[in-house]
Image (tube, rainbow, N blue to C red; front, top):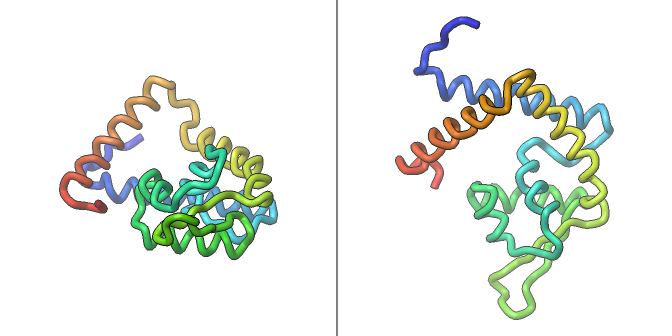
Length: 151
């Protein structure tokens, strides 16, 4: 592998994201799944771990995206029948969200595609190197957050 210019870190991350998204889209298409895009993954992964409806604010905080972006994701997922939104009975400023039966059933497909993505992305990379990669990418993210990029 050729030596890479360290100035290309953001471009490299963008290319990795693009290739990962293409793999996900191809897998979804092959399974006949409609209404879900790669960006929905973090929201769905969070909701799969919940036993009861959660405030939209909790999802926004967990996935690290701006509220308007997550709200748009919820609108799309609701339109396609994967989630439902419910107003809080005691506080009209709060809206809860939960998976529908269709959303819960999607978890099997989600997990299969996620497994394929990770297996493909990591290839034969040793676990030790995977951990180092995650630590270093987390540091890049923290550096950008500290500088005001996205938060």
